Image (cartoon, rainbow, N blue to C red; front, side):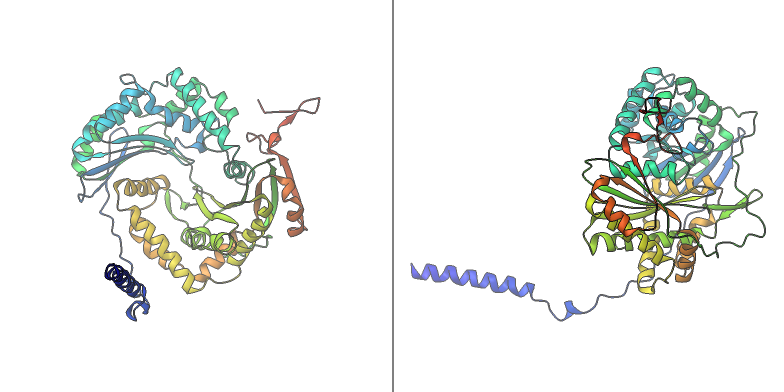
Length: 515
């Protein structure tokens, strides 16, 4: 019996010694890791351009490493910036796949699924894009469906009402969430825009006549680009385009999207802003909300491109702005997340992003936090905005942030849909194909001085928007921003269809939404 016990103890001891030895770091493991190798350059295959007699432009990038193809139809005149009612462009795009003259919504979904592919349409601020992804051997069948939804949509009343009901339900949920509501408010309050999805009130007002009119006036071949990316030759792509989109009728009216001009004597971005870091503070009082959303919003006067005549090029602020944003809030190791989440544990995440238009860029920096810490987070965000424009970024911080940008860019080009998305951006803004091949070099060439100059010239003077339970943080907010006027609007009095954000008042003093 004792010998068995000794044997068991001996085995346990041997097990512990073996495993403990594995846990003891060896000298080699304590050596610093090797330095990263030089970034691998990404080269985009040549873009083959052509045009059909009806004005439809065709762009093809052939990549045969995998048997997949993405086809994107870019409609440059069908973005949310050209709609008469908020949400009209998105509603029109979303209904394309909900029925044609020969296919029901169910048939479209079943047929594309049978091919092992997918189809979708979306409208953003600048344009509408229709996409298909499919294996190259099923491409022609998929393009058949794609052309049908683009050229023959029926916009059936039943589908319109179903879409409006579903979207309205989603909006009503989103508008009760502090983060989503803050984004809607920023669109109207800071950027002077409407949300591309629309509002419950604007969706209700959209009719079948509105949709068909927008479709008729905005979906034109001469303002469209058909993009093929993947396992397809230029010859086959052109043949498919001619077969399935060649009958698309060109309008007699020349549709040219106006492009902002810059004066010949423009001095560029070397301008130091005299604005205070915070221009305005707006609080949307959402009683009993579980958390507060803190947002810094700034409308930048420079857009994605600068144009002289018909020639457009990337605006000189684009690459400094991209690097500055990545330093500020573009990832886990960026400054906002480091200060707010990692160091203080005030949020699950803080970030910033830039949304480019032709003639302006919208900056949003945001974090969601407990109501009681909303004022502290607002102060931290303002401090980081100010710091970025007053002190050069150290090389030890700048280089990793640049690598984050170039790495994400390279990864996005590894898939056919990622490559197609980059081409969509080029043709949306009328940029040269060389932009893709020069992107990584341009990002790496941005200096710390350029980042500071961009931030000091452009990021100050934004708005702090806080959506949350105001009674829990207002006193603290006033203490932290003692010289700042703070505007408060009750969420129940909010009207996202109005520039002043306030519902109109009835004679009895009650609020009513704008009709």
